[in-house]
Length: 100
Ligand SMILES: [Ca+2]
Image 1: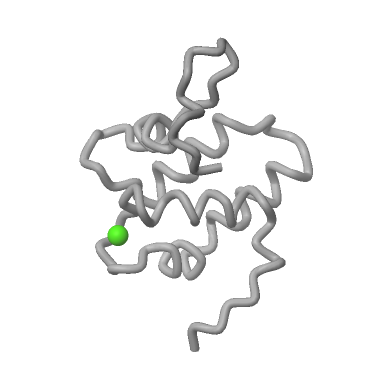
Image 2 (image 1 turned 180 degrees about the vertical axis):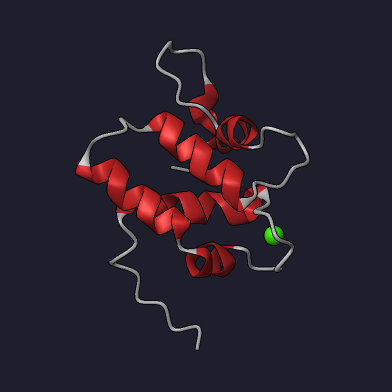
């Protein structure tokens, strides 16, 4: 996953986290806020599937966003954004989070 050698020009290159982050960060302030997150996820997903509904519901949950916003800056930095995306897109139900 985090193998730096995968950026070779094989023609099958996945976007880097930085590139994905830049697409989400519409106003380029290096923070993805809740609205940007919702809009970008909607743009990524087909609008009428249970999958997109589930992701959108999750991003609408401000508590979930606040949880991802570790330093409480009101936006997600790249370091905050990457694990948050994995959580949103993978369902987030399998985390055994013991941060209480
Ligand atoms: Ca933050």
